[in-house]
Length: 141
Length: 304
Image 1 (cartoon, one colour):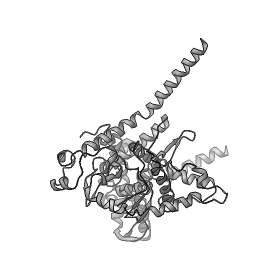
Image 2 (cartoon, rainbow over the protein chains, first blue to last red):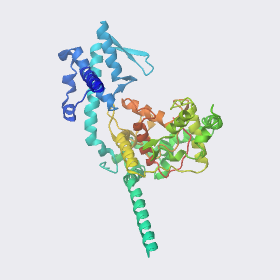
Image 3 (cartoon, rainbow over the protein chains, first blue to last red):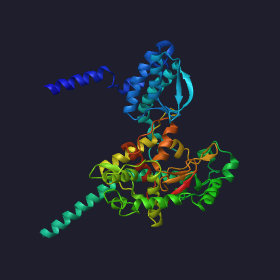
Image 4 (tube, chains in turn red, brown):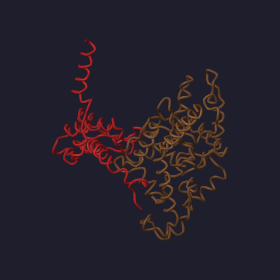
């Protein structure tokens, strides 16, 4: 009985804290990056929450985006810290976490969100298109 | 009569098993042969086939810089098979190969005793096996890459595992590759069960799937893009891409493993690469290695 209660409490805690996210393929394919990740229209906190939600799935599916050594999750973390501390910019770092540039927090949130959503929409799209590049399947020359 | 019946039944069973085993790699064979045909067609005459395969190249470079009439085994040296200029530089470097020291270090590691008295020689009694990896372990139902086999050996003997991309790992693999090359071994990847076939197919799908923020698949560069010039380099073809690893890459200034090269490519696509000993990485290696089946092992080698 104790074990059942513990499992229930753990599952509830994970679900409410957003650690377990389940989104179906139909929902993913309907996502509009420009709309969902518009910082001006949605506000930075909401865009960051969207980025966090979808990037967790991208990480789970092994399709997380990165650019110049900085992963989407690093953008999310950097923007989150900046918002909490009141900073206006985030550091852009290389793969050794050395600062190479900086960007506004709005730009960081947009990038994190667009990376997170695009990773998933692209993954869905690729399920239908990947064979088109294979010489033994759909590729014609 | 009974003896004849038993023999007949055994023969039928053996035949069915053999046919089934052959079935598991039928799709992979179709993929491998289609890839070879594609590259042979593409590099039969790049100048003549410009509109089909090289629409963005100049007539002059297709005429002067590309070799013609390439066949299957020519692709073992990658872009050097068709790029005349790169091949002449490659041959000059090969006069004093920069990886020889790595082979020697690898041989020392092979014979060095672990704390428990065993050594890598205990796990790899035959050193001429580089062409057999990755293989599907039918008991454990998982793929084993040469890198995971080395680290499994170290872990099983209470030793610290090695960096999967360079250093000891690359040097030891250079020794195995060199031994296999000297023995005239060929790439010999087997797909003998439904689970192995699934692992191959997962690797194939990964290879052809567009990834990362640049939305590039491996195939866009190494099938459709093979031979195309990107800045001043020409892209290598899929066929023959794994025969020569580990490689001494001029960019690295040291020997590196196949996983190092592949993860670099994936990061360049704008995606986080799977870990070197992960199932996903091993599935990709399995597909890549199968595409080089039957070609001579020729590692270690040097690449730009």
